[in-house]
Amino acid sequence: HISTKVKMPPPTMAITTCTNRRRHSLLPKHGLGVALLALSAVVSSQETPTNYDFDAEVDYGNHNNAWEDGPSSWQEFGHDNDPNVCGLPVLTVEEWEAGKYWEGNKPVIVKNVTDGWAANHNWKLQEILRRYPDAEATMGEAKLVGETGPDDAGNTLSPTTIKEFITKHMYNPLKYFFDRKIAIPKGMLEDCHPFPMPTREFLANPDKGKTYGLSKKAHVRKHYDEEIWRDHLAISIGADLQGLTFHSHGEAWNTVVFGKKRWILWDPTRKENSVERQQRLVRDFTTDDPDHLNGYEWIRTLYPNSERFQEIRNHGHDCIQHAGQLMFVPRDWLHMVVNIGDTVSVISEVGHGIGEGKKPEEFLHDPIDYHAMVVEEEEEEERRHRE
Image 1 (tube, rainbow, N blue to C red):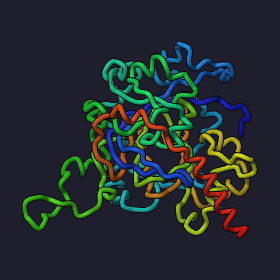
Image 2 (image 1 turned 180 degrees about the vertical axis):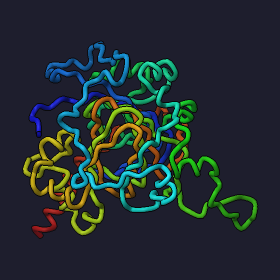
Image 3 (image 1 turned 90 degrees about the vertical axis):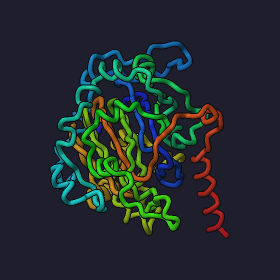
Image 4 (image 1 turned 120 degrees about the vertical axis):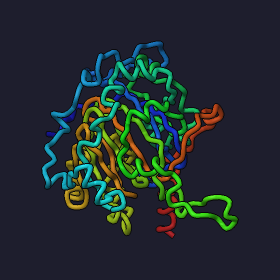
């Protein structure tokens, strides 16, 4: 069932604590962070009005008692993970750890990961407001943040807090909250114990894998930072239909605490000798402006196309991730995520350090127009072909 009725997704907020994440969204490349806190509003059951005054003092807040009170698009976007559709193994925690699947190049799902986590209680809607109201984050327009990445979003971002965002801004459909340099409160990290491997191993012994330098006075790492699972996490809370469109990065795991996520994943070997194949998959080049679509728009309008549908069936995965499950995404796998209902999750990725807070000057610069860069590159390529 493909609906033609489009609901605008609400905003998402993020607190992050890490450095130098590289995200790939077709041609532009920009950094994202390891530890982020993304929060987004409950979606209204009504269609988004076209006459919003976004500069007015309007209450767009989420005033529900629980995340479960928000609407869910399960009837439209949910499915039963038929092996012919999803095709991923569902492992126990013991199988995940014994097999060290994080060292492999295939996605997997791990079940019952959140058993015993304090986050099962402490991250409920009213509890997160009571425990962490002053945790900082940044707020900006979703499309701009998605195109540039949070590091380069500059003056399109403004600072906020968990409480301010949830109680005043979460219903605003043109707001997206995303950052990677804000330090997550320590208590929120402790709510996720025991961490999944390999993050837990790194926390237990951050110096593992180091050797002495020639001076014998200091340890140095055997591996580059991008090969190391770091300690800080992304803590994301997003409403129904929220989620980033197609992108890729280093190895990462994403564990859902509340809600569900729909994942579309695509094998990176398919783009090695054909950038055009990736372009046809993620964008609609039958239009004059083949821009990125939101994930739910892509599923509704582009996925039914026979070429895209068969490409994902034969060389990708279309899966539903339920609460308590971990999704492992290997390096360079192109993927997008759509929340089904209000969804709370925690994420870890390789190669990131600890964020120390957003600096005031990071809100001042004009962001790079990556779309204009892509158009310029395409026009230059056409000129070379004519010559």
